[in-house]
Length: 330
Image (cartoon, rainbow, N blue to C red; front, side, top):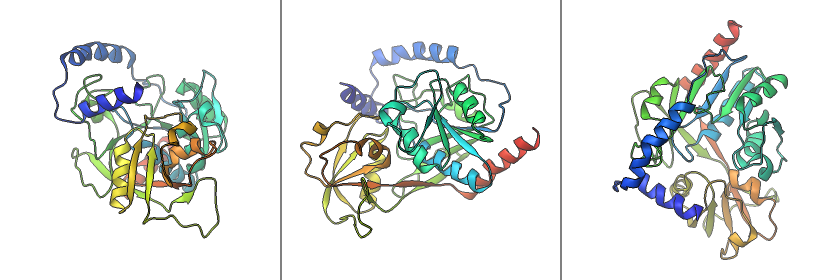
């Protein structure tokens, strides 16, 4: 049911189809509720807090951006930490530390991926302010929030909004008539708008936006394998993903010249062995999905495609300059 509804709304939001009246009628209700909840914090955070989020429902590429920024900050001599709500996990009001071996069903799939790729401490909590306090207590001098543009209780010093270059902002309408969680003019208040370019896309969103590339790495076997194991690039395989924008994954595979059968599941889908009964294999999956699939037995031979965000130099310089300036005035 969730999958069918997701496909229906996505097809509506990212097309020229007329939005049904009943969905348009609900927009003022959503706008009023969102406005009542969004009271931006003017509190100065205890350290530089960089929020990386989006204003649309679904994936936009923010998690690879968070990982890239964490590595950038660590290379510059800082002690970064990542905080997240841990969507899809069983998180309460107490912060929990995430490790590369944490159970994604408990803490969420994206936090586990970040614990592996960001190279720094990761904390999850429904209350991002509590997660911030835990990160600070753990020794972080810079905190990155994976999502959180719509989380008013979290004080922040810098905001980055990531827009998917393939989908853009859809029909530009607020939920539920469109994919927007906040009005388009929310972008005017953030410090950086980054547009993810996938599969050679050269979309332009607005003059203030900066495009960035996502680069695929070399596929590796799920669960490890011999050093001479090579992905069968010429074979036809099942491309499996449960991410916010599966089309971006499939478009990337097409650009790489792969032949595949597209197998999309709802975002954050909890995979079960039955999901793969009709698949011939081999499988190629995203790293986000791999953290869940590695706990399943009986899968066909499965490969994982790593993705890395390549941030332009002006973005890297601006973020580091902000952190230096903030810390200089502590």
